[in-house]
Structure formats: structure tokens, C-alpha cells
Image 1: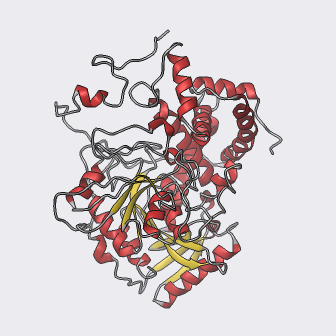
Image 2: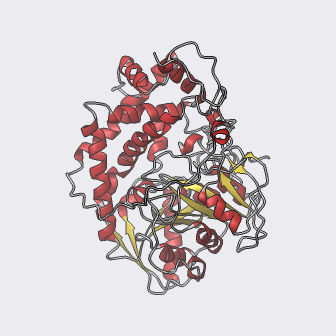
Image 3: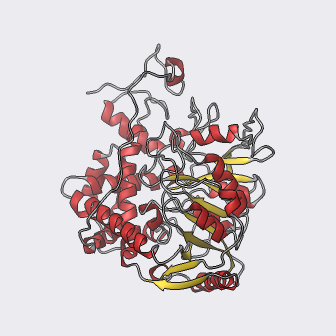
Length: 91
Length: 423
């Protein structure tokens, strides 16, 4: 495919940053494909600096209490542990 | 079930009368439906049941519509063929054995096969217009901010809109009328100027309509597509429209800019899928980072991983200026180019897709080629503009071709009127 395949170690580093494990073969495939895709992205260097005049205003609302999901609804898709989300240890 | 248009067939009835009484409206499976599972075409959400309705679903119910089920899609909207779904690919009822386009391929196939009267899709970089073009149906990508995204499971917030797919422009306009309008749960929505009477705009009157044709969107398109495109322009001309060609240099960079921005937003949006609040349940052994990475390897398909990684890369230290900042400049440039082209034209026209529907399985191994197929649709999302895809006709070998008409911000009536001259 591309001559400019990225280093598999670099893909592994990005996968670590993104918290996604990859199988070895996936890692190799991505390394090959990313070279070609990043080459295409690099053509953006030809884009001139552009004045960005966003004609927009913030939409705000008063910070007031209103109805929301109750605890049971919020937990309905989770592995419920007596009314809490159950997660792995943090470190 | 032969086209695999639906992931979940479960009827949601309305208890009121309204403009969509007696109509079935299929809903793409990244739009939340209270009590009915919403998978985004992903194993990660295979058993996820939303506790609330998206605003558009609420509006369908208030309009009397019946929802016959949730439609198949590329996983998290990431694809142009509806082949990256964890629930298998969807076939194209208008060209069997070929892809229905994506990512809202299930919605378009359901309408094309008559399995639903109408459907909702979502369009981040062409995901409503592409499947409409490939299945011979009509699809509208509304102006950013016209339709609420509350309850839409996010892929790339700054680009996506929910839009209708229908057999005709008039029916698409009818569905748009129901879902459009501000929502206090989505601060990016706003009151559109004008009366919002989209259905009555579908009168087919193109007398005096000036069409601009950006030459960059014809360069490199398949010959058969270009031929069918010009036949549709001839037809509009015969009905009183006129056209001129226009060059928009910025469009040469649009698809790359789109992918940098969409992947960057995706890498952040999809961080919520950690297997804790929803998703596959784990027996925890490692620490948070290890478990998080393991559940995401298991739950995400390859295209989703590819985009999360590329987005993470584009935003990482040392690369942000090179990719993301340049992409934002390109976005602003595309916007300005559209503004000036639309000063000299009422609408801009192009083939919706530069190619006819691909054979199934053909494009999966080559992601870059699949990305580049979105060259004509992605600029519209970058510029936040409305666009419609209407059937332009068929290639000589019988494959559907779509005509894309792009309008100014909140110019939905203009593109509906123009499109209704053809469908």
C-alpha cells in the first residue's frame, strides 16, 4: 500500500492515549493505512490562513432545578451495585 | 427481513392524531427511543435501552406517527456503505448486491423497499444524502441548528443534523416540518427565519431559478454519474431554470478537513463508552485504564477504532496545529466560498455521490478510498448549510444517481422547491 506507513510503536502509543487495546494484526494494518490517510490530511498545509468571523451568540438559560432521571433510570443500563455504578479500581 | 434494513423491529405507537397519522416513520438506531433499545449499530450498545426519547421522537409521537422499528447503520455513523454495522450489512433494494450507502443505509433501504413510509437518518458528512442517492429516494440534510440533536448519540456534534428520507420531496418536506424548530434541550437550535411551511414549497416551480455548478464537484466523478447529472440539469433548464459554472478552490480540501474534524470530535465523544454506565459488563481484574481499554477493544468495530485513533492523533501534542487548526481554517474557507457562490446563485448543484453504489464488500479494505467518496457531501456539513438529494435518474446500467442541491443557511424552502421539480 503506502510507502509512508507510520511506525507501529506510534500507533500503539496513540491507542494507549485513546484507551483502546488493539490486536497485533490490527496494529500492523492500522500502521500501514495511517500512512496513506495522514498523507492526505497533510495536504491541508496548503490551506491559507483564513479570517474566521463567527457571527454567533451564546444561548443561555437560567440555571434552575428541573426534573431529571431518577436513580433507578440512570442505573438501568449498568451493572447495578446497590444503587451505585460499579467500576474498576482507579489505580 | 431480506434487506436487513432494521436492527430492531418493535412498533412504537402514538396516542394522538396529527399530520403523520397513518404514516410509519422508521428511526435510525442512533436516535434515542424510550424503552426500545438503541444500538448505534455497535456491539458496545447491543443491550442499551434509553430511559428517554430524543426530541425528534417526541415530535413524531405528537404528530401521530407510528415507528415500525430502528434502522441499521454504519457503527456510530462511521461509514459510507452500512457495512460497518455490528448487525450485518444492509442490501440495496434499488440495486441488489450493492451497498445502500451510509451511514443511514437502513433508513433509506426501509423507504426504498416500502418497509416504512418515511424515515429519519442523521447526516454528519453525507449520511442522509448518500443513502438517498444510492437507493433512489429523497434525503434532506437541514441547516445546522434547524433540528434538535437532543437524544442523538453524538459522533461529531459540530457537523451533524437529523434529517428526513422519503420517496418524494413533498413527503420529505412533510417530515421536516414535524421535526424542525427550536428546543430548549439543544442550545445549538434556533428559530429559523420564515414561516417553516416546507410542504407548500414543494410546488415544482423552478421558473427563473439560477443554479451554480461548482466544477470541483464534477472533476473526478464517474463518467456515468456526470452524464446522468447533466440530464437532470437539462430537465431543470427545460422547466425554466438556468445555470452557470463556478469554481470553488476551497472544496479541494474539504473532505480532508471534514475527516480531521469529525475524527477529532469522535475521539472525544466516544470516550463515554467505558463499560461502566452501559456496555458489556466486565469482571474487573485490572485498573481503570486497563479495563477501559479492554472493553473498548471488545465493543468497538475496526472503523470506529480507526477513527478514534486518528482523531486522538490529530489532537495530540505536536500535531494539533498541523491537522486540527488547518482543518478549522479550511472549514472557514469553505464557508466563505459557499457564501460568495450563493450570492450569484439560488442553489448550487452537484452529483450527490461521485460514484454509483459500490458492490458490497468492495470498499471495506481501503478506508481512504471510502473517505474520498464523501467529497461532494462533506463540504455542506463544514459550511452548516442545507442540502437535498433527489433522484437524478439512472446510469445506462440501471444504477441510481442522486442530484444534490445546496441552499443558503435556512434556505430549506428554496432547495425543496428546486428538488420538487424532479421528484
